[in-house]
Image (tube, rainbow, N blue to C red; front, side):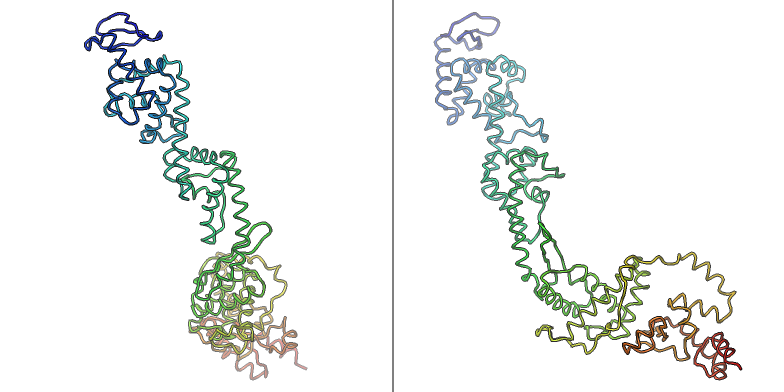
Length: 543
């Protein structure tokens, strides 16, 4: 029952169920008009007419002074009032009026919702902040309003997330609006089956791309997050669903990726992504044949790798890398090499020399004897395949008639797994400063030792025909007897002599020594070029 209380200043004061509200004295409402206006407002609230006719609702609200309609609506129809507040709260959120970008301040301000109710939009509102907050504080349902605002916020964004999930879309735009933490929290509130199916569909991208996945990559594919945190940081429901989906998809990958390796090994493809089972996980091997500079050699190598994989059922990336180093070195040393059949014994010796010294100068990364031997043995294995009947019939490249690496045998390689430390450059520089103090013969010995690594006996027994030409410009071959392995070479009919490549400058010095020692060789009837050796043998042969 509405009662008139008094007139004070420019307002008439009325009472309704112990709640006092005002009307403008200028409008001069009588009690019948006030009752009619309250009844009209009540009908609009109870029948939700504010949803259809916003103009009539705004008119009903603004008949009362300031925010006094809040008191009237709360007193007359409490439940309808809360329902109306929820409607405008959702509308406010859907219009995207919350601009804060931090998790802690992403709340729906109650006074903003009431401004929307009374002013039909913030831009038209003339109601000041202070009277609205004052009215909200006087309401007994203030806590209910906060709960409704929070529930409405959750409802709107969970609904939007559900729509994106049903379309199997990422949630980048949503996580940018409500933060990644909130997005993950809302994802965890979805039904378990719905959320897990969504995760599995997002993980199908990794399956189609034949790519292993991790928790970080899966999360980054769903939400826009700069820094991935541990799963313990996230919502428990989200973490549990993610773990379960990862378990299911990982098991699928283990079967699918390994079974489909043969699809990767197409001769037309230059990049093969292969997987092998390694305990409970997968081991990925990427073979990129574009790393091999010569395309025709790379083509032959593809056939070998395919044959080797089909025989063993797994791939070895270490073998691929070692062979790639050797093949690129061979084609750099001799650009005329187009196929494995073009590799000669001279090229094989040049490869060993290149890997031992020149590659260190070029890249600054010395190779250990184990790595060098592995590169040589890889080439030997590939050529064996190309020479035998197991080579693919579709391979039309020239067939090697012999294996130039067949004579290379390496023993106790595990003891040489680490690259030996070279003599420091500053030590060599200091030694070179004093070579002028040496005799011509001793200086030659020093240069041979420095450039070839031969043993003392091998140098002393160099013969007059030790210099041989090679197919390379400014490069010669130095022929010598490897006395340490000579007996083993004879047992295998490998010949007494071995050769190393040397530069033309050292070859010229040796040629000078050959000419200088010619008279002594004729006198002693010995083939050696070392005067000291010939004098020593001649003295021991005197009666």
